[in-house]
Length: 138
Image 1 (tube, rainbow, N blue to C red):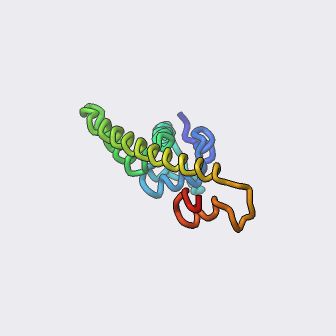
Image 2 (image 1 turned 90 degrees about the vertical axis):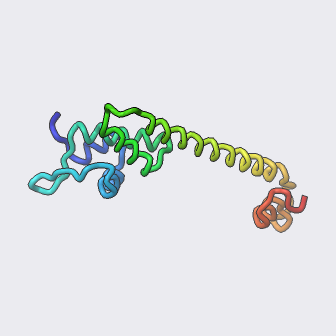
Image 3 (image 1 turned 90 degrees about the horizontal axis):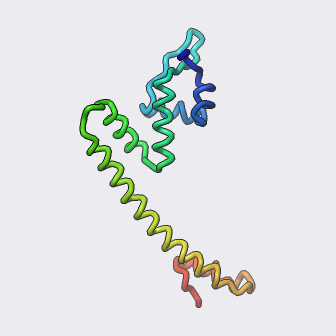
Protein backbone atom coordinates (compact mmCIF):
# COMPACT_ATOMS: atom_id res chain seq x y z
CA UNK A 1 0.00 0.00 0.00
CA UNK A 2 1.19 3.45 -0.90
CA UNK A 3 1.70 5.78 2.08
CA UNK A 4 -1.19 8.16 2.79
CA UNK A 5 -1.25 11.66 4.19
CA UNK A 6 -2.99 12.57 7.43
CA UNK A 7 -6.13 13.85 5.67
CA UNK A 8 -6.65 10.55 3.88
CA UNK A 9 -5.98 8.61 7.11
CA UNK A 10 -8.59 10.78 8.80
CA UNK A 11 -11.15 10.06 6.07
CA UNK A 12 -10.43 6.31 5.96
CA UNK A 13 -10.83 5.95 9.72
CA UNK A 14 -13.49 8.63 10.38
CA UNK A 15 -11.09 10.32 12.77
CA UNK A 16 -10.41 14.04 13.09
CA UNK A 17 -6.91 15.16 12.14
CA UNK A 18 -6.52 16.74 15.59
CA UNK A 19 -7.37 13.40 17.20
CA UNK A 20 -4.76 11.63 15.09
CA UNK A 21 -2.18 14.19 16.18
CA UNK A 22 -3.27 13.73 19.79
CA UNK A 23 -2.86 9.94 19.57
CA UNK A 24 0.62 10.53 18.18
CA UNK A 25 1.48 12.97 20.98
CA UNK A 26 0.52 10.45 23.69
CA UNK A 27 2.21 7.53 21.94
CA UNK A 28 -0.81 5.48 20.87
CA UNK A 29 0.23 6.06 17.27
CA UNK A 30 3.86 6.18 16.25
CA UNK A 31 5.25 9.53 15.19
CA UNK A 32 4.65 9.48 11.48
CA UNK A 33 7.57 9.87 9.11
CA UNK A 34 7.47 13.08 7.14
CA UNK A 35 7.96 13.97 3.54
CA UNK A 36 10.59 16.47 2.46
CA UNK A 37 7.91 19.15 2.75
CA UNK A 38 7.10 18.07 6.33
CA UNK A 39 3.82 16.28 5.70
CA UNK A 40 3.07 13.20 7.80
CA UNK A 41 2.79 9.88 5.97
CA UNK A 42 1.06 6.73 7.20
CA UNK A 43 1.01 3.12 6.05
CA UNK A 44 -1.39 0.17 6.37
CA UNK A 45 -0.19 -0.66 9.89
CA UNK A 46 -1.06 2.87 11.03
CA UNK A 47 -4.56 2.51 9.56
CA UNK A 48 -5.00 -0.84 11.33
CA UNK A 49 -3.72 0.57 14.61
CA UNK A 50 -5.98 3.62 14.38
CA UNK A 51 -8.98 1.36 13.69
CA UNK A 52 -8.06 -0.61 16.84
CA UNK A 53 -7.85 2.60 18.88
CA UNK A 54 -11.15 3.91 17.49
CA UNK A 55 -12.96 0.63 18.13
CA UNK A 56 -11.53 0.47 21.63
CA UNK A 57 -12.70 4.01 22.35
CA UNK A 58 -16.14 3.19 20.89
CA UNK A 59 -16.35 0.34 23.40
CA UNK A 60 -15.48 2.81 26.14
CA UNK A 61 -11.95 1.60 26.91
CA UNK A 62 -9.75 4.31 28.38
CA UNK A 63 -6.56 5.44 26.67
CA UNK A 64 -4.55 3.53 29.29
CA UNK A 65 -6.58 0.35 28.72
CA UNK A 66 -6.06 0.65 24.97
CA UNK A 67 -2.35 1.22 25.53
CA UNK A 68 -2.23 -1.96 27.64
CA UNK A 69 -4.18 -3.97 25.07
CA UNK A 70 -1.91 -2.77 22.27
CA UNK A 71 1.11 -3.71 24.39
CA UNK A 72 -0.30 -7.22 24.81
CA UNK A 73 -0.78 -7.47 21.06
CA UNK A 74 3.00 -7.13 20.63
CA UNK A 75 3.34 -10.76 21.77
CA UNK A 76 0.76 -12.68 19.70
CA UNK A 77 1.77 -16.11 21.07
CA UNK A 78 1.08 -15.28 24.72
CA UNK A 79 -2.05 -16.33 26.59
CA UNK A 80 -4.87 -13.81 26.22
CA UNK A 81 -5.77 -13.92 29.91
CA UNK A 82 -4.44 -10.41 30.51
CA UNK A 83 -6.64 -9.01 27.72
CA UNK A 84 -9.58 -10.89 29.18
CA UNK A 85 -8.88 -9.40 32.61
CA UNK A 86 -8.80 -5.88 31.15
CA UNK A 87 -12.10 -6.49 29.35
CA UNK A 88 -13.69 -8.01 32.47
CA UNK A 89 -12.69 -5.03 34.62
CA UNK A 90 -13.98 -2.66 31.96
CA UNK A 91 -17.30 -4.55 31.90
CA UNK A 92 -17.52 -4.23 35.69
CA UNK A 93 -16.91 -0.47 35.39
CA UNK A 94 -19.60 -0.18 32.69
CA UNK A 95 -22.09 -2.09 34.84
CA UNK A 96 -21.38 0.25 37.78
CA UNK A 97 -21.96 3.28 35.55
CA UNK A 98 -25.21 1.75 34.27
CA UNK A 99 -26.41 1.28 37.85
CA UNK A 100 -25.56 4.92 38.60
CA UNK A 101 -27.40 6.01 35.47
CA UNK A 102 -30.48 4.00 36.48
CA UNK A 103 -30.55 5.86 39.82
CA UNK A 104 -30.11 9.14 37.95
CA UNK A 105 -32.95 8.24 35.56
CA UNK A 106 -35.26 7.48 38.47
CA UNK A 107 -34.40 10.78 40.18
CA UNK A 108 -34.99 12.73 36.98
CA UNK A 109 -38.30 10.94 36.37
CA UNK A 110 -39.44 11.84 39.89
CA UNK A 111 -38.33 15.43 39.38
CA UNK A 112 -40.08 15.84 36.05
CA UNK A 113 -43.31 14.37 37.47
CA UNK A 114 -43.18 16.73 40.45
CA UNK A 115 -43.63 19.79 38.27
CA UNK A 116 -46.83 21.68 39.10
CA UNK A 117 -46.33 24.18 36.28
CA UNK A 118 -46.49 26.89 38.93
CA UNK A 119 -44.37 30.01 39.12
CA UNK A 120 -40.62 29.60 38.81
CA UNK A 121 -40.29 30.87 42.39
CA UNK A 122 -42.28 27.80 43.51
CA UNK A 123 -40.73 25.32 41.08
CA UNK A 124 -40.10 21.98 42.78
CA UNK A 125 -37.57 21.01 40.13
CA UNK A 126 -35.43 24.07 40.78
CA UNK A 127 -35.69 23.61 44.53
CA UNK A 128 -34.77 19.92 44.33
CA UNK A 129 -31.73 20.64 42.17
CA UNK A 130 -30.69 23.38 44.56
CA UNK A 131 -30.96 21.05 47.56
CA UNK A 132 -29.41 18.06 45.82
CA UNK A 133 -32.24 15.55 46.22
CA UNK A 134 -35.48 14.96 44.29
CA UNK A 135 -37.89 14.95 47.23
CA UNK A 136 -37.39 18.63 48.07
CA UNK A 137 -40.59 20.32 49.19
CA UNK A 138 -42.91 17.51 48.22
